[in-house]
Image (cartoon, rainbow, N blue to C red; front, side, top):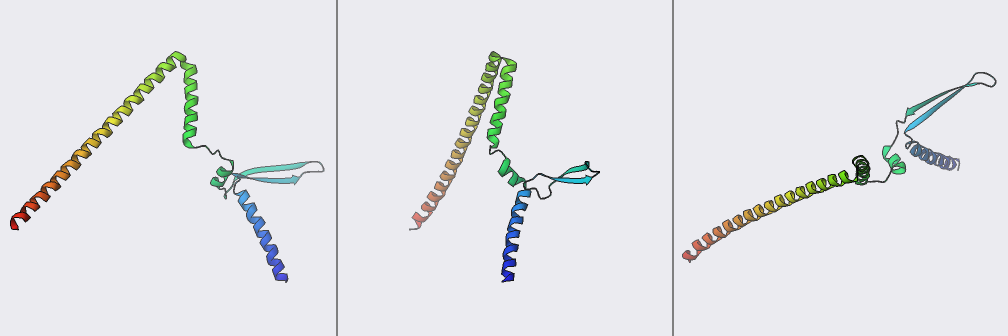
Length: 149
């Protein structure tokens, strides 16, 4: 009976210890406080902060980090840059800059689309050549088989 009680108590203590270790793994730094009595109403305090060797960055991020994707962060940064440019350049110059930027992007999209179409045309041409070569081989084999009959 005593061994069962001991096992139960040790199990409870171990579970509490694991919970504490998991919690401590989320601390980026650990604090070390040392108090030394200097007199009746005086104390000397020594405080040190050390990096936590068991720090788990992923758990810390899951608990305290923003759940924002990289794309959302880039979009926010772009919005901040655009607002600064709008304030610096003025509305007319900013609109002209945006128009030039949009025209450049449209030209790049058109170029990419033309290249993709050209690749499709060349792939279709190669496929046609392969099928005609196969067709010629099949016709030649059929021609060889017919006279033998």
